[in-house]
Image 1 (tube, one colour):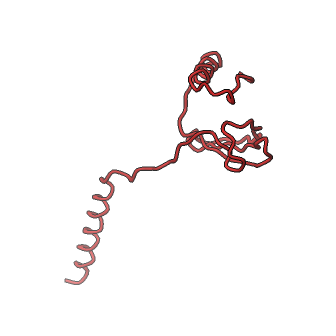
Image 2 (tube, rainbow, N blue to C red):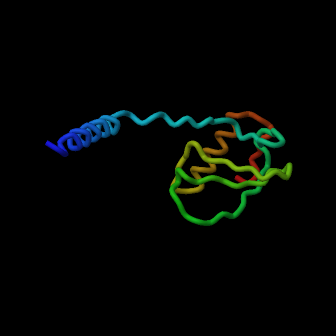
Image 3 (cartoon, rainbow, N blue to C red):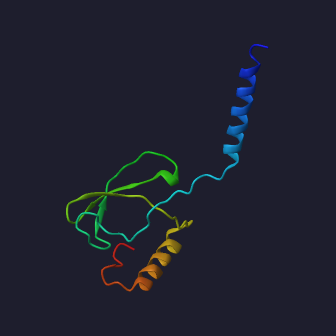
Length: 110
C-alpha cells in the first residue's frame, strides 16, 4: 500500500522525539568566580554601573560597568539573594563583608 511507509516513518520520528523530551536537559555550566576585573585583575574593584533601563527576566539580567582602571566590563548575577527591604539586604552585605575579612572590601555605600 503506497503511503504506509511514510506513516510508519512519521510514527517512529514521533516516538524518538517523545523519548528525547523525556531525557533530562544537559546541565548548564556557569563558571562562578570572585569579583575580579578581567582587565586589571583587581579583586573587588570599585566600579560604576551604567544606566541600562529596559525590562526582562531576572535570570537574563547582566550588568555593564566601568572599572576604576577605565575598562568597560560586564557581569551576570549567578545567584540571587532576595529581600523585601533594604535593611535586611544591607545587614546581609555587612555580614558578608565581615566574613570575607578582606581590607579591599569596604563598607562605603552600604
